[in-house]
Image: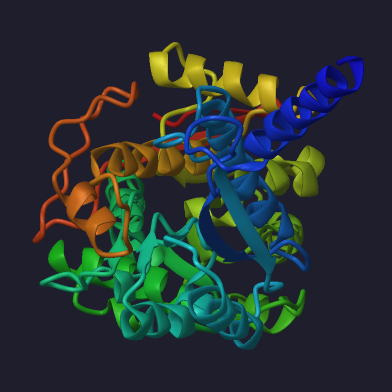
Length: 390
């Protein structure tokens, strides 16, 4: 009898063990992560931009994952390094779109890289969302279905610069340009030229225009081009990365100490200020997000969640932009059907209307409007800190 009871107990234990091995949806089984891709500069002269953009995205994804993810699925950012090199970016983009199951590409950094990655996104029919570039090639009319932007364009940034310069009494012929010799530099330069022509100055294309090669610090020839101009520049509009622009400004300030130096947001404000050191005073940078020290609720949330994700990280404009890009993207995921696909996530984002993300500007999209913000905030470096430029 004892042997029989012992045998029954063994059978019972074995049965319970086998039951536990059976996968049950929602019980003891983790759902597959929802993967999102990114190819960006994690090395090279633009690495601070890529690292900050990734940090901002991951800070918000981390917050969402602590709340249970999207439909119970944790968000995973697969970020690949392209070193701000188009060839590497194209290889990464093909890998992400063809060899992984990423639902979208988010937060890529750079115009030269976008020139090769946007066509791949369109061909592979995968969303290219919130890229850190204001180039026109991402802003077609009507828009590409697979390209959706967050930030204002370079044309809008440089137009704001022209308004500020002319309001300060600078004459159009006293303006010069220093730009990166590629599609990024071209985008900012053409926007400024268009702004001047719109205001009645038809000789904008004849203004001095110095250039330098991407991923180098060879700024001397660009400086000489402006130095050889017949009119001394009172304002220089710059479209480059922080390393090259810092070197140029240091040289140029020894020649023109009272000249205004104006940079577009892609320069990377905090790295630029650090690179300039004591030469940073009075340098102007246009921003496409509000200042990260303001009292807006979206900024308070950003600072809190950034600290929770990485207590060693300092707030900056770039990671704040990445944070907002992730926040809007997650809103799209929440609106998507239960079975999220590369197609229906686009439809979901296009359905966003007057979304309050806590920055004082409502966010709206539609099939014909693929850019969330058109506003520019100008800042100036004073005592090694960024303050609103007036």
